[in-house]
Length: 289
Image (cartoon, rainbow, N blue to C red):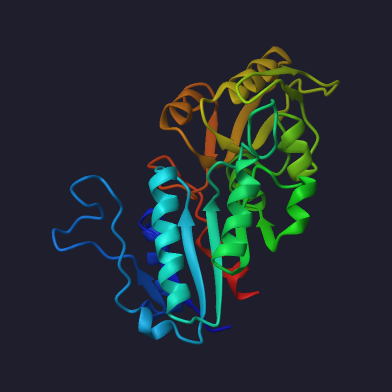
């Protein structure tokens, strides 16, 4: 299916690979200002799409990574959507390689907001986004998600494939917590989220002794959950402990787990130096379905 891909600045590294496959004329990048910057002197975000006239009556997909600048990135995304809407494109879709504010996906305490749902509602209602694709959304499986035109795709198969190539097919893949089990349907440990900041974790009755263990999770922020998983696995005398992670959100968290795990497999949904699993084909296959 023919489409134009417009990339925000946070996803240009992926858009380049997609352009190599589809043809560079199908990929449009957000432009810089006269000074070669993406910001005005006061720090406000600048966005320009000079080729917007090409989008009339066309299918347009916006590629965006919600990190490493979640707040500025959303402003850039909204400006691009406004430009596309004004161009009278036939349809607008968004592909989030990483969805920002995905952990704020329910109201944990009085006075909080479900920010993830609010964002999706805004994108679909205000900007008339027809479809939203997300790689390993943290809120996958939440009941409210069924109300919106969202397709969640997973990098799990890619991560597992890469791990098995190096460590063999007998790796035991586990989830680190209940949220992971909800998203992937893979058994693992029990982690209970107390509020937006605190969790508690305990092991299930799973025999890990002398086994190669791969823990698969949607993201690493501080690395606390994965450190606790590693400690439990080592106390259970696992032979090898591998981390299979989709989103490397905070660099210090990535470094923290790299120092203790035998190997970290990290997808490049966010532009991180440590990423070693490419999601370019996953993006393209999803868009072209």
